[in-house]
Length: 114
Length: 113
Image 1 (spheres, chains in turn blue, yellow):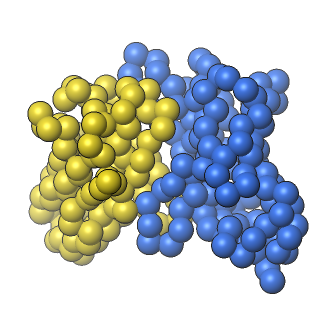
Image 2 (cartoon, rainbow over the protein chains, first blue to last red; image 1 turned 180 degrees about the vertical axis):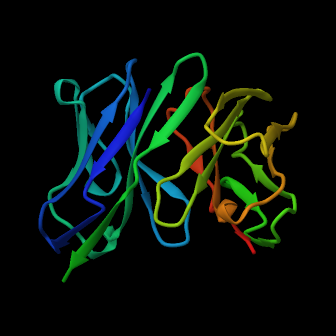
């Protein structure tokens, strides 16, 4: 069975500081991995995705994530936080095991302090 | 270009009633997925349809059903509504079966009273 665990339901950083949001996954088959961002009262927007190509994936708004198979991790980072980064972030895994399914983590709320 | 559109945006229903939610994918996208997002939680996968056939189903009761039409739009139906069905229902479309890039609509906020 597939699962996603996001460590930390809330993360607070200062503006200009490093952002690190943690995600670990479990999958019996090679996964596709995603990070999405959700602003209040809006749908989800794709930040970046891993689809078995390069293990370091660059996304929009300066975010990137590294796929580490040995650690079953796909942590999201950004070198310098901006106030506009304050939002809810979701890690997700997609697999096709005879039927397609996407599993989302519980989410991490990012707060950015001035 | 129009993104994924969902209707209605908000809905209030009474316990025991039935509801139909609608989704129009991005033009050219053949895959539509539905998710339920309860307040404070991540989206939970309900269904995926590709080329009008069900390709995936999450752990939801049979009260939940969906279909995809020839123009690739989709409906999600929920029967015998429970208070616990109150949630944001999200629709996502993609051009590929494996959903390697999904685009989400703004969602339908369903409140069951």
